[in-house]
Length: 114
Length: 111
Image (cartoon, rainbow over all chains, first blue to last red; front, side, top):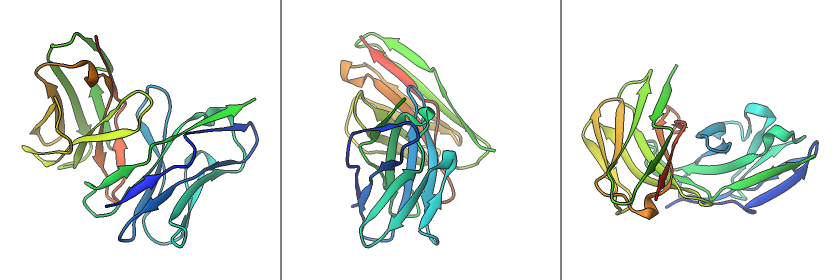
C-alpha cells in the first residue's frame, strides 16, 4: 500500500522568500502524485499533478513540483512567497486507475511573515 | 464544466440527533464519489467511496453511513451523532487522471 509523509507540520517563510514543502511517498508501482491547497474553512483545491511524462510540473499560483523517482520525492516549491500563500498544503498519491487508493499526507501549514 | 456542491455549509447538532449531509455533482456522469472527514488538527480520513448508484464502500467502521440514491448525489448520514463526529466533511469526485476535486465542505459541530 502507498503512503505519504510530509516533513514539517508547520513551515514559516518571509514574504518574498523561497517556499519549499517536502513530500515523500512510498508506492509499489509508478504513482500519480498531487499537491492540494486548503484555505481556512474551504475545500481542497488542486495545485498541480504528476501522472506521466515531464517530471517538473507547473501548477497554479506560481507553484511547481518535481517528481524524483530515485528519491521517492515530490517537493513543492515557489520562488517568492506571497502573503496569500498562507494555507495548509497536502501531498497525495494514487496508485491505480480507479482512484480508490488515494492517500493524503498529514499536511503542512505554511505561514508567510511580512 | 464540473461543479460540486455540499450543504449545509455549517451545522450544529446535539449529541444523539440524526445527520444528513448532501453532496451533488454537476457536469459529469457516473462519477466516483468520496466522503472525507477532517478532524481539528488532523489530516483527511476517507470515510466512504462510491463507484455507482447504490454502490458504497466503507473505509472505516464508524457511526456513519452513506448512500447514493442518484448518479450525481451522495449522502452522508447518521442515526445518532456522537461528540467524536464533529469535524469538517468533504465530498469529492474523481477526474480523468485520478485527481480528486473537492466540494466546499460542511463544518459539523456536535454539542
